[in-house]
Length: 260
Image (cartoon, rainbow, N blue to C red; front, side, top):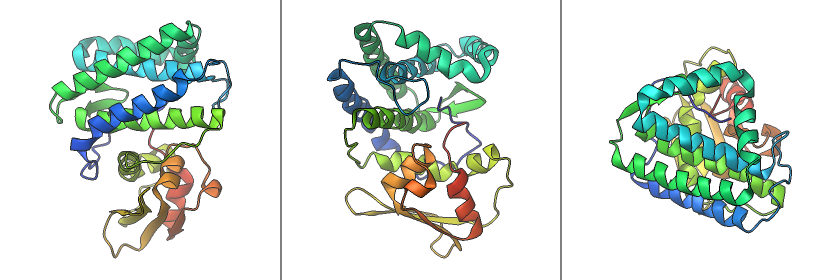
């Protein structure tokens, strides 16, 4: 449901040394939330998806990451199954996992998370392996898995009515959102603006996270939380406090995404 395509993105804004421990922490925090909830049949904001569907989707994605890293030649079979399922691929995978007993799904998700973390820890950051639509590297996959865990976790937090406390881990999600600007325009079938952009976000501790030249005419400002909720399509632009200066910057916030 949230597969990002690498278009030769500049990942200089992603803090690789912190990303893997933060990925583990994000998974552990979501684990604590769902482990305390007995009813995984509760519907989430994603149409037709329960809590079990959300966890099943994360578990299925982790399983595919392991295939891509460990046996890349076998990933062709994953792609063929995805092509055959078309737009229903994520729904079908999630439904299959959600049909399993809660305890079994939880244990599989936990085991998969641990294996993915170990596999990504053991490969060089620039090591390439197949993914949906392109080759990706470990440097991209680590924050990508963190982003997906956080985004699907947000759906579960919303379902349970529990505040999703923002942390410094959002910097990885925000960095992907920034470098995903090209993807956003590509997905919207709009030409990529030639002008540089400046993004200034306020982190959870009040610090400023910034990307792009300081004198850029196209500017985006707001909280890091709002930006992450927007680029992961968890909130509409109107539901955030994000502001934009420049026509292209406003267009970007309208179409922003980090996945296809």
